[in-house]
Length: 351
Ligand code: SF4
Image 1 (cartoon, rainbow, N blue to C red):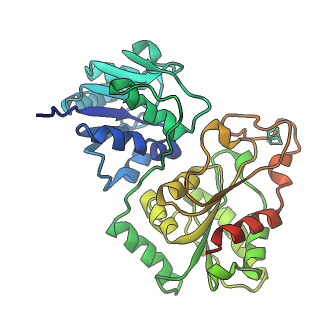
Image 2: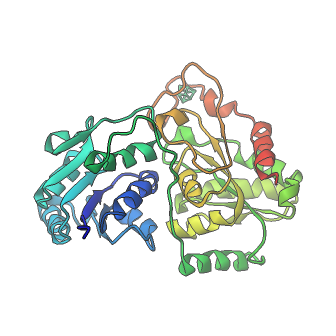
């Protein structure tokens, strides 16, 4: 008889990190239930995921801030009865949470801030994709250490609710639900990662749609705060007298955005969360990298993909992307030409 092992995975980083944690969740779910500690913003993206037994929300900045909130979440985590915790997010706080939940085995990376509270430390493979790095936490538990990075793709499971969200968006725009779509994701938390030429790309696309996406409509995805970027794209598209751009910013849940991406012929995105949602849905992806580079571990994992970046000695200048170019010229994004991006869109949409 095989004994089930109950695992807890603590991942309270950004949305992209949560998406890239899903191969680890799948790996652990082969051995027993997996409970995930997530931020309120990211918890919903794990809905319907077959590898996830439950999600424990840790609102570390609001309702669970302070000692009492921390103790409350630790009690909830303790109640799931995990025998091992995987510290996918490496802070001292999450390590202390696992300790306070009395989880005896605590596994994390050897360079994480919380490493002194871990019972096993796994070498952080800076040269690997982050999905593979996170997955490697499981190999420390019961498998020989892998020398080469495995090929992994994250997974998400939008359901009927999310499909209905997307149908509603298209119907509101007066479109059939099977209208071909091309997605643009112009936003990023970090200002220098936002390619400034999406409006020009939209205008060029509307004039030269790929033949495999004839009749396609452009849809802008992102958070509600990305609405001004969507408005600038829509305005430029309007000036070309092309069909209206669909503004989906702030209109869909995270998983709803994944459902939308699953229907898109291609996504053009910065190095930001939609890139990882597209990897999970295997949507062809044109990824635009400026101050960061894919070798930091966050490149696209869709089967069909193109990574674009300008060759500059200053790249990468930051692990995430600074809010302002430290050299003042921002050439990494400013000089990336819309024509180059347009060519990649055409290439990726060829059947
Ligand atoms: S320093 Fe170089 S890589 Fe960094 S934002 Fe400026 S142009 Fe881009």
